[in-house]
Length: 168
Image (cartoon, rainbow, N blue to C red; front, side, top):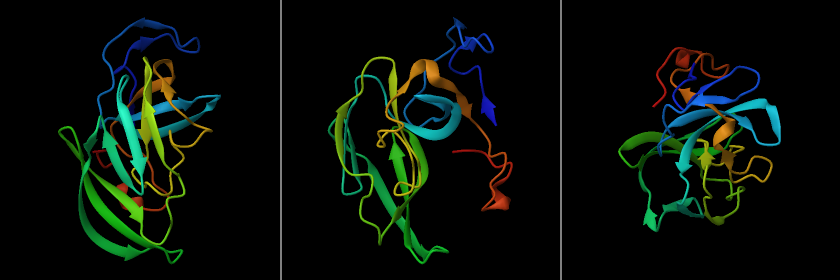
């Protein structure tokens, strides 16, 4: 479920903004149209804001030189036999759950990037299995591609119990 008017009131189809209503904050979960293929919609967490300097290597994230806090929790093995490690990540005043695959090398590589004006850097919470701003096919998300702020899970085919839950 997406709150479509959080980041501006837009004309349908034309996507022309009539007036702004706010900007994404670091930690927001947003729905957006994939740059270059706007028929595809993605839902990811905003990590980098315009002007931020981001650094990611060996599953360690730094924003403007500050290490993003992770508090590691339980480990389990998924259906494909991969060891998963759950952590709680703090970005600003937002706490959320992320997952790292312990047995998988950092497939999304490393990066160091300054986010340009009117663009956002997004990452999935399943960090080693997410097509997000680290992937050149997605890249940085322009403001005009934002659809809105995701607020609830509509359907999750892998975990039916998540249907209707609030996104944090």
